[in-house]
Length: 251
Image: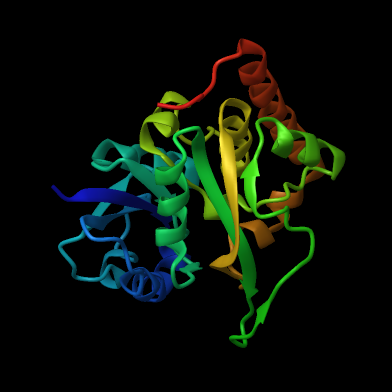
């Protein structure tokens, strides 16, 4: 019986032309025998700008919906998530070779792990890459460690939420991505870490594209008042989950 990893991508018009690069990186992934991927591409809105860039592949499901931001698009895509694991892949990013297999191996080997992340390199407009210091030690990330680090470091986590790989049932139990205009992926990361141990792979798992149209580069993303409100909600959710004492302890 074939088992599936669900790859979820939210996309809008300006980032749609990067989809072929993301697809190429996905096709280059090598999975263990008996595993396959299913790519769910969800447009944040309804336009004629995205469909022409969606690759023709039976392993891809493309849908559109009313706009609500990337978190809403990813969460509504989960209606078609027919696999045991979910991997994030933003439309303008690329998976590094071996990323899916490493994430899968970590969670298959240890039922107490709920999620995995990996090292990131920035992909610059000229095609060069740039790393940055501060990665955690390879291996397990204990519950609460991400929130503690994030709180002490001006709301910057030590692992990148764009690399998340997680158990589908845990993702669904947490309600998917947060209903925020931004930082919805950070909110999910902290929620996951509040209820389950994670895993960090020191190998590069993602090329994070830097370009002028990306949402995190817009002025609205760094508006001080909104940022403080987002961070307050993200932290409150994580602490509430910690306080409930609910968690993943193994299977």
